[in-house]
Amino acid sequence: MAERKVLLITHPNREETWQAAEELVSSLGTTIQFFSTAPRAMPGVVSVDPSALPSGIELAVVFGGDGTILRAAEIVHSHGIPILGVNLGHVGFLAQLDRPSMGRLASLIQDKTFTTEERLMVSYEIIRDQKVAATGFALNEVVVESPKPEMVELFVHVDDRPLSLWGCDGVLIATPTGSTAYAFSAGGPVLWPSVDAMVLLPLAAHALFSRPMVVATSSTIGIDVESPAAVLAADGYRRIELREGDRVRIFASKERIKLAHIDDSLFTDRLVAKFQLPVEGWRGK
Image 1 (cartoon, rainbow, N blue to C red):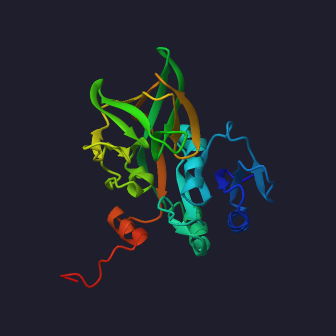
Image 2 (tube, helix red, strand yellow):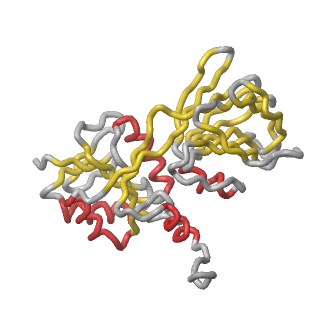
Image 3 (cartoon, one colour):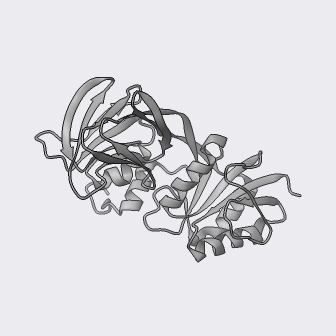
């Protein structure tokens, strides 16, 4: 058996992600031992339980869009395994390669010509009846929002100092990675990945002051639920029901996720490419 180990993570319902993974395995199957967390069997690939990954995995290759990469982060973040995304989704801001680049992907895995970058994550605690009722993490964002199409009242404080009581659709706390996702669509600022900060963003608040704010990672953000019910959503898919009187504490996680890079292109270049920003023909070009 090959000594080098690579984990494959695919979108659960998209056939093209399976085809791309199988293409990679056929290229490198004799030199790399591949593992997969998916229930569907793949020739030359060992199926493993996501909660019991084997040791020594050097890379997780994720086939899909940003949503698949976020789910992959849940599987690998505690193991320190870098994630390399192959975009078969839409914008694919977290991905490094597109589907036609499979030959390049095989070469960079074979030659180990990828680098890694650590990204900030946030952790959350739900305090209920003065006890910790639930904990979790997010790579992109944590949102406390209304479970129904109506406003929710949320009291926000930073480092135990009151900030504001908002009647709003919700309050979003994003990492620099998440600043180009939901937070971006909601009018928040883009943070470069090297910025050690969190975005605090009220969503459609009925208030004179509802601007997005940037908070240091040394701070803890608290959100008290003042309405009969609310929902916490972490990275858009892990959801927990909240009750009136619950407090959500959000802070920088001690763990960081590792993202693999195939070249040394700057974040500015990726921003321009992904959002198709107009740079040609400008003064000085």
